[in-house]
Image (cartoon, rainbow, N blue to C red):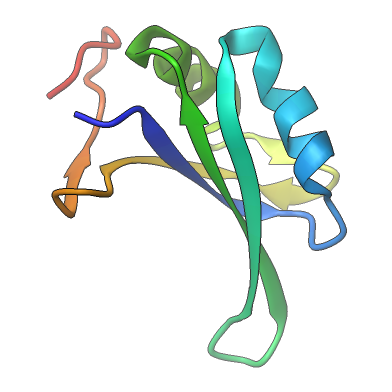
Length: 97
């Protein structure tokens, strides 16, 4: 499994550096990119694509951010093996399902 995650619901003006700074306390960040799109209603949205050095850091990010708010925006965290196109999720005790 790849150590990549997607963070949806980010503030539109958040920078890639700010995203990396937000994530690094939970583990080593290999890369942090922001993709800006428009949703179905034409409003801008920002998605964070983060690659971390280990699944342990990914679990910490999930626990810290999924379902929480950042500057009035609800955050949603998803894990994905981008190369295989499959999704991974964590169980109640933080283990991979």
